[in-house]
Picture 1 (cartoon, rainbow, N blue to C red):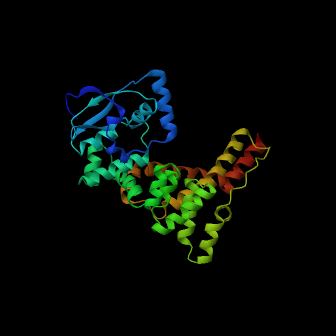
Picture 2 (picture 1 turned 120 degrees about the horizontal axis):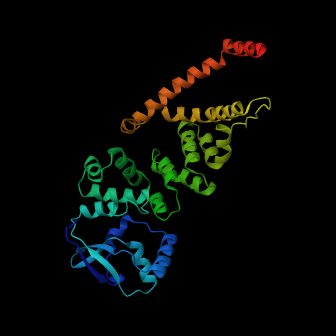
Picture 3 (picture 1 turned 90 degrees about the horizontal axis):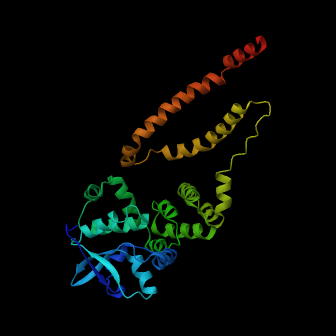
Length: 306
């Protein structure tokens, strides 16, 4: 950024929106911005760069749309000097504490790739790991163009979209239609994609498309709630509930660990995986001690002599 930005005013219609191709302001966000402008006025200037003698917005797209709807004659603008790479970096940095979505981050990162930067260079610029950059760029580069448009319009959940990236483009469309038609969430979509990839019989795949909820219920039945024995102490009743949670969570974790996550993810997760491994070993020892016949006999003998 320039060390000495200038401040000026400009009519909303005079502000260029070429860089807005990386932003996806939803109608609800525009309405909130309109209310804010009406109640508090413009609290911060929009940020622009000069291109061919015209100010181009880097930040402030919602304010521009809201001000136009309110017939405001002008907006306060901060003009900074940025090259075509720095303008995209600035767009992310100016929104670190604001409502930039994962999709918008991905669109900005794609623009940086088009500027000739590698994913490692982008990560260094932004203080992020290459894996963070790779996951977001994959969202816009491996997703079917039709689904990308639905994502921009808020019709497709980003979490659902990410679960589709491992599928061929045509299958992405099929399963996305199922997800939107039956309101599947990201976790359900992950399970449905897993079933789809394992299925080889066309009839099975047709069933998955036609009856996704039933297929998921059959493949992943909900655990039966564990009723606590009233003879148990309060702490043991809590233990029963936690054991039920462990029985539900453990198979899901195993599916995510076999095969292991990609190497870049493992590099980030390694410290947490080591902590989990130590806790699991400690838990295994405690479970083995409590579950053994010797432990039960010792407890019984203690009760008889007390």
